[in-house]
Length: 317
Image (tube, rainbow, N blue to C red; front, side):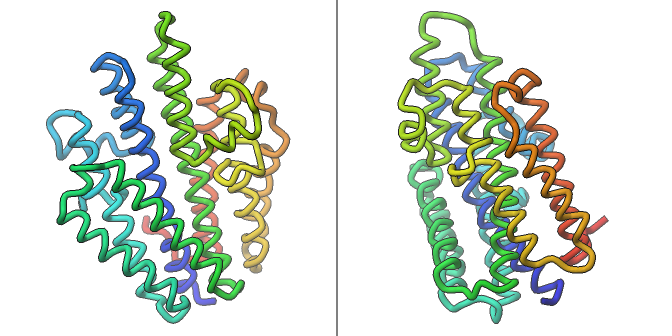
């Protein structure tokens, strides 16, 4: 497969997944901001989300103050923000259009319709009027795109680059959601009598943001604890959005497209997968969850660079 074609397919998948995960991160922040807390704590939650997304500086350049309304506008429809939902869905559609011949009609029509419907949603003001409904729509369209891809495309190199992009992006975003919410929770804990009730709604919102609330209940059949939330979203291979499940997919799809240059990249991905596979959550927490996730995000970034070097178009300097 030509590097240019592989590049478009890979980034089409990453941008589609990024739009969904941005919607999930905004949704959980919106839900947790409604819990009983000080205005300062709520503001810190939004600030932490921008920080972990590496968008704080870009936000500060465009907005004088930090508030939920402006953050939502910046992350949903600000075209100057390349990670906004509107920018991601636009980039996914443009990448798909560039390799229209490598996609089935159903995949192209799904992505194109998503883009056109989004323009209509933005013009109608749905994100500002009912952000929760808009986020559900974004997630639904991403699910539809993924399902159509799996259900209609030949399992060839094009398919494997799409799946690799999807799961690399998902691993990155699951780690970011975990990191930002654990940091925000730890900084906001004050030891009062409402902590237990607050914790339930806080962690339940996070689980729902990654479609894991029912899964948690089925797996643990007990109260929601931060340790088990972390274990579920990091180390369980049977949880679709966990770091381990994502890395299993990345490793498998890398093996399916291997070339003469990719042996080191496969080993790098394999080591990252093995670390997750053989880690225990108590050891991770003892050594520091933030440090573990920070290192994981650095390794995912490096893995993305290696994939670009071995298979795709060279990254801009």
